[in-house]
Length: 466
Image (cartoon, rainbow, N blue to C red; front, side, top):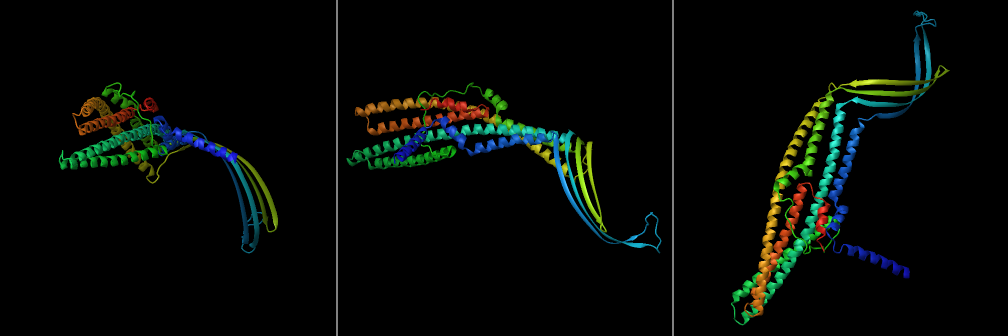
C-alpha cells in the first residue's frame, strides 16, 4: 500500500513539474517545442537527407563497378529415331543398294557451373559527369530549402506567439470597455429616473454597451483561434505566455538604410539561392542529355571459370566427359547511340524547356525578393514612427484621464467624462501594443528577406519576456 502511495506521488510530482515548466513558456521554449512537433520542418528535413543521397547515387556511375556472378545450368537431352547411314566407317559414301538405317536411342545429361567477376570503369562519359553535377546541385538545393524552412518556422513561431499576446491584450481592453460602458449605462439610467437627462441618452448608452459586448465576443473568438493555432504548431495547448516587460524599447533596423537591406537580400536571401541553384541544376541536366549523342568509352575486365560435366548414353553405350576452363578478358569499349526511336532528342528538348523555366523562375524570384525587401524596410520604419506617435497619444490620454479623475473627485465632471477618458486611454494602449507586435514581425520579415533571421533573434527578444 505504501509503495502504491509513493508511486502515485512520484507520478503526480512529475506531471506537476511537466505542466509547470510549460505553464508560462517563453519564446525560446515555444520554438523548441515546435522543432520537435512541426510536420513541415520534418518534411524539409527528410527532403534534405534525400538530397544527400541523390548526389551519392549520381556519383556511383563515375566510380568503378565490380560485379560477381554465378551460373548453374542443367540440360537434359533425349533422342529417339531412325536415321539413314550415308557414310561407311572409313568415311566413304555408301551406294543406294547398301545404304542402311541406324536406330538411335540416346540420352545426355549436362551440368554446367560458371562463376566469375567483372570490373567496369567509365573513361569518357560526359552525360554521366553532368548528371553527377546535377546531383551536387540537388544536394545544395535541399540543404538551402531546409535552412529556409527553419527560418519559416522562426517566423511562424513568432507570429503565433505574438498573435496570442496581442489578442490577449485586446481581450483585456474589451473587457475593461464592457465594464466601463456598463457603469456608464447604470449611471445614465439613474439620472434618467430622476428626470435629469432624456430617455434617448439611455438608448444611446445601451447601444454603446451592446457594441462593446459584441466586440468582446469577437475578441474572445479571435483569441481562441490564436490559441488553437499555437497549439497546433507545438503539439499542445498553451493558454498562458510570458509577456514583454518595460525594458523592451523598439529600435530602428540597424543600419537605417534601405539600399543596405536590399543588397543583403540580393546576396543572402535563401529563396534567391534556391532559384539560382535550380537554374544550375536544370542546366546540368540539359548538358547531360545533350551529351548522350556523344561516344562513351570504358574499360572492362572479366574473369570467368566454367566447369561442365556431361553424361551421355547412346544405344546403351555410356560416355562421360568433364571440362574445366578459365577465361580472362580485358577490353576497351566504345559506343555511340545511333537511333533510339527519338527518345534522346525528346529528352533533350524537354530539358531545354525546363532550363528556360528555371531561368525565368530565378529572375522572378530575384526581382520579387528585392522588391519585398525594400517594402519590408519601409514598413518597419513606418511602424516605428507610428509607435513613437502612439506613445505620445498614450501620454496625452493619460493626462486627460488624470484631469478628468481629479475633476470627478472634485464634483466638476460627471462620471461619464472619466469613463470616456479611461476608454480612450485603453484604446490608445491597445493600438500601441498592436503596432508593437506588427513592428517586431516586420523586422523579422526584413531579416528573413536579407537571409539573416536566426534563433539568435528569438533569444534577443526572449530576454525581455517575463
